[in-house]
Image 1 (tube, rainbow, N blue to C red):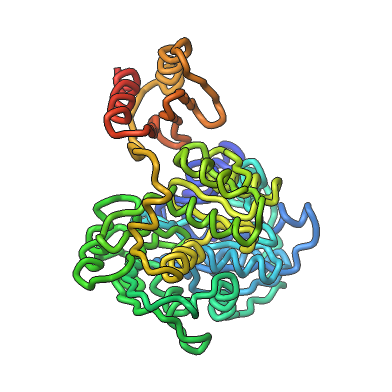
Image 2 (image 1 turned 90 degrees about the horizontal axis):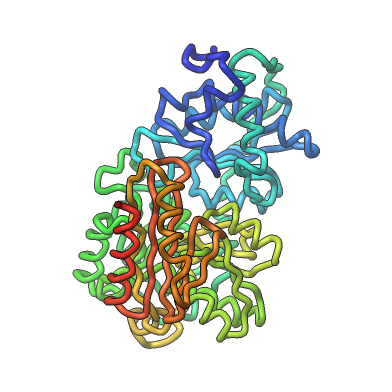
Length: 474
């Protein structure tokens, strides 16, 4: 039965307008996202993809949130009602779903709200081979068609002609990752892992601790491995410093070599060194890039426009070709496919691999870091120092009433500055001859401007940061 809140006849996709984002579906349950809506999206997903070719099967998975199994089952009902079979992968991390889509060569749907609070849920959709679906690549069509189904403007067959087949893919996922990074010969490492009560509590034991695959020289110290979508210990977003406090303390208390923190759906991984100090994601990007270039000389490496300047420098120094792109996984994945890039990294701790269907996987990135650390005797802090050349501000958000006006004011200030170059690849980027730069981007969903600044030293970074903010917040 269609819920009353989802039957507004105002316009196509109106019931979904607030929850269909640039790259996924995300909203509070049940007022914004419910099983009726999930069922309609499932049907619309199949119809949109069927217009591109035959869709024999769809793989569906979900995270540990209380609302996830019901939403996933409703989506599956929408799919089977269109005569398409469903592979029910059950509990999964987002990168496990991408593995399933790539390994089985079928479209996929992952039910998760990643690091968002417990009342949220969402859907990440992909074509066969884990190819992304975003607003400009089918998601808007799915939104509009689902809106028509909900409002009765498009009929649904209502026939459960497709079947649902449960399939456990965790072991196959772990085995595949083990073929990409060999950890069997590294020195013994003590590794603290903070799963944040998210899906890493399910996948880490299978990948890093399963002796049936082969025993690894890793002593895993688990933090918050219990699957709990209410996140009783801390928010499952490792980019927020407060959410790293427990991991940092545990690394120091246990004399660990490294700490790993995963977000709620375990597609992102954040690293702290043996001192408990956070490692910048740009340093991880450069480190993994060097490892991939050793295997694939001259390959292309993708980085977004607010990744540290050190990344393209280091890539070039190691014979690779750095390619700069916009922020966001759909842009990274599209550019990786276009250039056949071997690896891509973002400031947000998303890491993408050609060997993983160009999809992002926090687990594979973590394995690369463990391999880099364990293949030599130095502590992680010493290795990271090789990849850290500049001082960064981190992302600073400013609430503004006129995004365009504030961006224009900042651009006007620097348009005539000596030695400044300006580009608009993603928002406004201004680079200076002394190696400093800043990027100012509008949020797509909130009245915010996001500022990132980097410079050769802390004084120059602070000076440039404060100068730009004075204009933004005028």
